Image 1 (tube, one colour):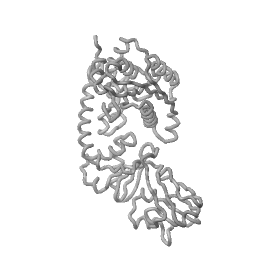
Image 2 (image 1 turned 180 degrees about the vertical axis):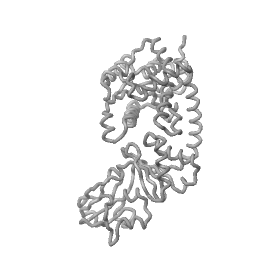
Image 3 (image 1 turned 120 degrees about the horizontal axis):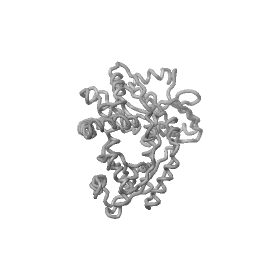
Image 4 (image 1 turned 120 degrees about the vertical axis):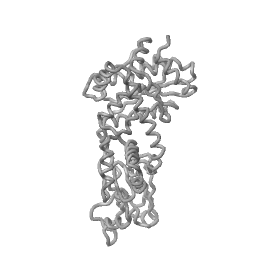
Amino acid sequence: MTLSFEKKLSSKLGDFVGRRLLVAFSGGKDSVALLHFLKRNEGIQGYSVSACHINHLFRKTSLWDEKFCADFCEKLSIPFISYRADVPRYCEVKKMSFEHGARIVRYRALYNAMKHFDAELLLTAHTKNDVVETFFIHAVQGASVFSLKGITERDRDLFRPMLDISTEEILEYINRYKIKHAVDETNNDDSYLRNFIRNHITATLSEYRPGFENNILGIMHDAVKYDSYLEERLKPLINVSDGSVLAVERQVFDSLHEVEQDYLLHSMASQLFRVERRHIEDMKHLVETDYSVRIDMPDGYRFEKSDKLLRLFHKRLIVKFEQVKKASETELYVRHLGKMITFKGDWVDKELIVRKRAVGDRFGNKKLKDIFIDKKLDLFVRDTSLIILCDNCIVWVENISSDDTITVSVNRKNLEL
């Protein structure tokens, strides 16, 4: 008898015919079941499957899990690659939450693996239970209503084929085929919110109201429809030309309905960090002020309201710095800003200092701050404008000076923030 797990996944195989697939393989029951099923049907459907394991170096058994995944793939002749990443250290350095940092590290490694195997689709083993748990997590943590749409099945080259499959169906499959899998020893640790929800909330609701998951999924399905409608209307308003800086024009923002404003702020922020309702409220409160100002957001990001624009950017873009251009050098790269300065003429033979603005700076016989204000330059522009000094005297200011013997080109698209 064909199991429901097999029936549901079989209906998705048409999307994989003739394609190269990479499975995100943790070794847990969900990804083991997915990888096993795909390998069984590989020859029939004409696709090829490979696997990637990311060792976060967080759990005590992480090395054992990595070996289990390697052995599993070797036994089934599945091309395999693994990556190790010190996620706790990464999050500490980047000032990020563990959840956000782990996701960045994980997907960076997975897309590297896709290049390694020349894969066309990345498959993850997220399930119906994961979707429902995520709904409760978002609600408990005060997420914005726009975050309740949950996980989508398809996002460009990322495919989640098991979103309609339950834990019970997965267990039935791995028991039928006697498939071993790794067990996360922290699954019973209720100090993790997801575990508490799984072990107490959804487990109790399943007994009290069997099938409640479908009602939750219905709400999330409606949320997806509303999100799609708003995204089509509003996402084009977000300026992402700088790559690492998201912005929207104040005049455009002020013309929107309150619901549209909330969605636009959520859409901007959700590209950079996990958004809660309070973050949107904080940003809206800032917009209502009568002066230029900025506030802190999660994971080192800043939200700024200036005269013309609302911006979201990482604070690394506005840190204090000082670099030296040595005599005879024609170029200087300011890495954290993604800016390349090119020098011509007499500047080539001079030693110059490049930095950001500082309190008390004067350009000519006027305060630099007053010049910026007269030019009506936004806070962000002021704090990212390059200041060049020769013999401790400011000789050139980006966005102010017109001397074409010093030019600046910007490319922030590949900045690691």
